[in-house]
Length: 209
Image (cartoon, rainbow, N blue to C red; front, side, top):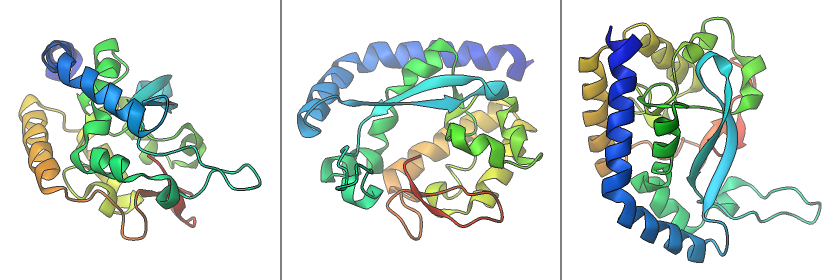
């Protein structure tokens, strides 16, 4: 009953309340980010949601669009600004996703929405992470965030889809607050962001997720 009805009700109510309460702060943050990033303060990207339905995710921008002489984007570490690092470490860059939650693209708690390019790389078990709406935070985010392996992250994602309860969501939200305050797991062991998923047996490189 909770997963089928009440979860969406709480998502809508809480996201709408948060947007109303935080509106002045979000407005200031939008202006500051526009100045700091010298342009568009928002980062938008297509991501797969529930049942792999594609939607446009919105976040505050943390990286520049700097490119090399061949027109390719520079590595994340070179594009991530000091201001961007601050947004990421405090998770403030994720606040615009409240709009995605309000629209029904996302949930407050669920597997994080990853890149569309990853869809063909999942095995049958990993694909189960798309049985529910993706979340602003999730079980993987309070158990290592970007510091754990892809296999560990996907296992936690699937575990969540099979054990959704109101109590679990409340625990994850509480642990998320603690994780953000402690700034745990912001980076992976080898990158400022999370390594790109190349398939469970593949090589891993860097990408913004």
